[in-house]
Length: 186
Image 1 (cartoon, rainbow, N blue to C red):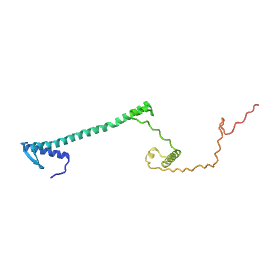
Image 2: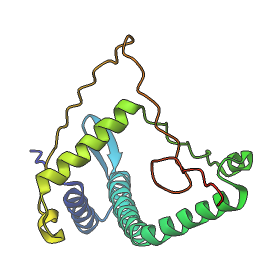
Image 3: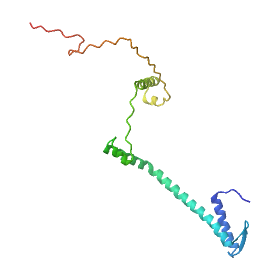
Image 4: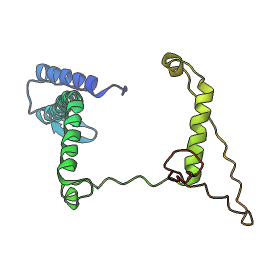
C-alpha cells in the first residue's frame, strides 16, 4: 500500500528500510524478485541508498540556496545605492547625452516632451481644484486628504473675424502713463 508522503519523510523511511535490510539480510548476494525482475539484496540496497543520497543532496542544496538568498537580500539595498551612485557619477563625468554612455550600457536620459497649452491648462485647473478641495488647512490636515480631483477644461475657439485688441501704450521713463510735457526754458 502506497501512502502520499513528502520526499524527506520517504527518504527517512527508505533509510530505515536499508538499516533493516542490512540487519535481517546479512547475505547481500541473496537473490530476490522485485516486480518481475531478479536482483540481489546488495543491488536493492544500492538503489535505495541512491534515493537517500539524492534527497540529502537536494536538502543540502536548498539550505545553501536559502542562505545565499538571505545574504543577497541583506546586501541588496546597500549595493543598489552604490550602483545608483556610480551610474550618476558616470553620467556626470561624461555628460547626460554622451555617446560614451552606451559603453556602460546606459541610455541617454530622455528630455520630457513639452506640454501642449491644453495640458498646461488642465494641470493648472487641477492644481486650483486641489487647493480648493483642501482649503486652508495645516500640513497635518492636508496629509489626511486623499482622492481624485477631476478638472474640466472648456476651450472656445477664437473667431477669426474678431478685431485684434489695441496695443498697449509704451512705457515712459517717468513711470506715469502720460507723456512728459516739453520743458521750455525761461
